[in-house]
Length: 221
Image (cartoon, rainbow, N blue to C red; front, side, top):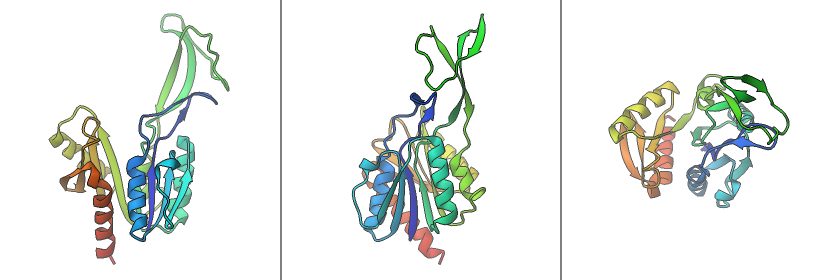
């Protein structure tokens, strides 16, 4: 199989030197990529943390930093890479910075966007606008018809609620397989499935994902 894996986190730029990001390092995606490569599959890993992936002769690593970097890489790879499966585990920014403003609600705001926003403002306000969901472009904009695996993280929900959220999210993106967890349980377990979900120990997650991708791919031949 030829597999594309996305991992790591994207940066949303406030100016040319400052950014908003998240806490995830991409180890889960890197582990999946290495697991698949060690089984003999050809794997391309797109990650913001290339140091998390162990070397493998079947593994090609391409790095990115910003949301725009990852979007461009995915568009190119998905449309021209001839992939049989895509595992989209990257923690992608939910918002773009739509403007940087100084002022207050009472006095009004002034746009202070710049290559480097001055640090002398008493306070600044950021306008955040929703970013497109890259996983939703995989089937639609980029026309991918292979096996698609989506990841979902939630905070403050029960395991039963997570199962329902995961399945709705899977169907929304037309994914074949879903991996979902909560922030509190992320180091210990994940739910994996489609329709029906299995609780998988975190240590077994990479192997479980690759097993299920292989099963879906080979039964479709």
